[in-house]
Length: 289
Image (tube, rainbow, N blue to C red; front, side, top):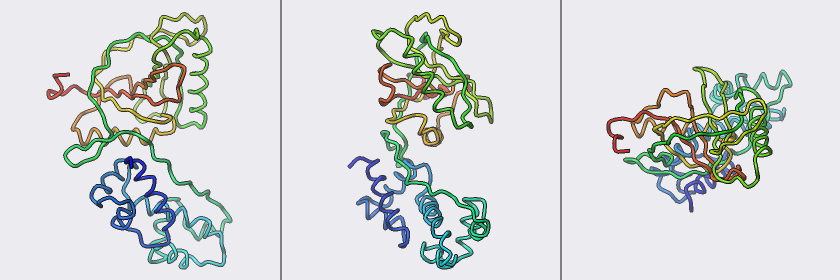
């Protein structure tokens, strides 16, 4: 069984047993893995601890129960293994910003969140720590032609905007052009959610329309990751993976105007798996690259 399937099965097991005592031992046993390996694997794949995940899912399961006036908050706390009503109320307020009792009084509803999907990617073991698989590599200088635009990740439409501009590029190139497609995210200001995005190909294309440019991407020393799935749906996972990579590998991020580069092997199939290149500093131990 692949590592991500182990976690997928564990998430289903947890969801079915929220009203039962759950522990690292019980979940690891249900997954047929050692608790030490499962603990490291779960944190690496999900980005947070098993205990925090179980707590968040119990709070999620409490939402429809709160709407049931026949159940007291004490009953709900007991049913979902919170121990006491006060511990349930404290945890609920930390997660949702309001108390469960005020949710009843104000006749307000909060939507339940489905079981999160597990992002598929390879992993590696570094001295007992599990991290998303990576290689250290030079990203060679390349000239990319395509369309440039800006997105704000704080808005609801940024995914649609990136996809629509990608289709715009495809609609304006010859179908005989094959090869890789590059999506380059750059110039993210500190504490800002705004990015410049270039969707392009390594061909000298001439498109006489606004926002079409040819850009030279400089040589960069990078950490290279491989993912399966839509980058726009795994942004938080990528941030967590990169932070974990820096901590475990003892690498340092590079102060570059390019935040990351996403490379698809086939310009005509942007639903395929892809590589992510993230600039990092070349340390003395990396001089052989």
